[in-house]
Length: 253
Image 1: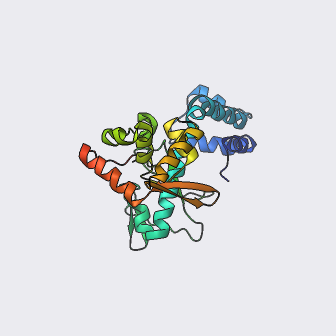
Image 2 (image 1 turned 90 degrees about the vertical axis):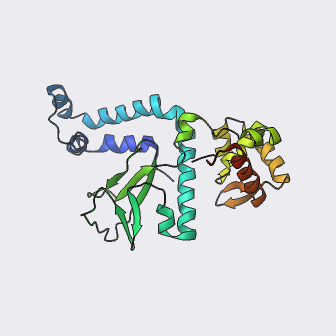
Image 3 (image 1 turned 60 degrees about the horizontal axis):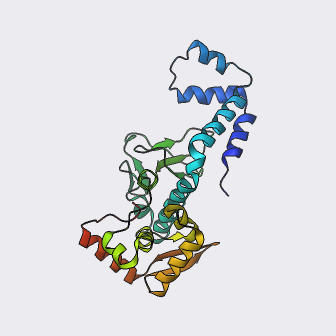
């Protein structure tokens, strides 16, 4: 299970002031602190103050949008995992970011063309994020787990709202079912579809039942979740609607 923001804040609060001070100085790229900031950095209560600040930002900025953000992150992880298991690393990294490529058994990051980093069994985390765009962040310094943080697929839906239904498909199926069809260009659960469309779970279930009875979608169990995806007929119908409207974009980029 993923660590929660409250566990993160507790870990910060429990850290030594020197550790927190060092991390904050790294974030400032070694710029000289002001007198006011120097006083804050010297405060023995610095870890608790930073933890409180993290939670304040979470409650004010992130928490209201967290269900939609978490859905985007979940869908990205599943998309990458399916590509990796089916087609290998080259396919999993394809389109993840223009700076990342798979080259002869190595992950190449264009920002560091002359550096070579050996993991030596430490593993490598791939972390989708809605905050890192348009860049990509590479972490290799001990004691942190080596990681690559990249923009998650579907970030645009957070600012633009859920995928707009295609007009021709909307006339045929109704706007909500057309919207669900667009979102199911990638597998999704009932809960995820509810979050992305703003429709109640009972309403989503009803629409899914109609689309499934029509042979346009199917469902499968993935661990503890049930995921819905387009059938070949559903893909053909949705693809034809996109072609006819001149819109080649999938429902969730």
